[in-house]
Length: 124
Image (cartoon, rainbow, N blue to C red; front, top):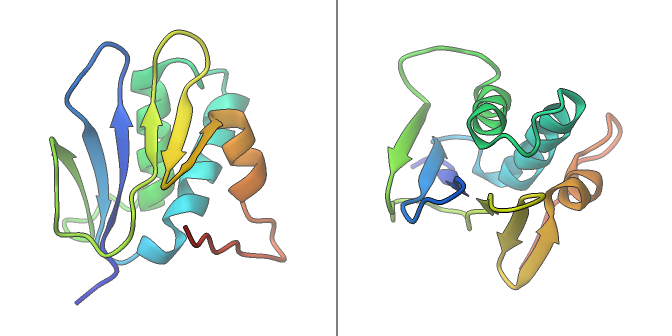
């Protein structure tokens, strides 16, 4: 059981994905990525894949630092319950792929980061 999901990240020049895994937060995975991208943009780190990835992971875990519930997976992972948003770094601003949607990271953050009054559910 659980609500397993990943945020898949291809850092610049890499063919192997890095997956940020959650066991319980799958239903809000798109919003989590959006919040992490907003934080990275505010810190001036949106185009810096190592820092941006860490900021996204911190957002995912809430800086919990516990021994269960979250993980980092290199390569493919198939034991998940929700589609994975895929963040791809390259030249210029990173882009997010989710189902048939491809969008610049800043636009993803603007579209999917919830306000305090709402939570967004994405069905693809």
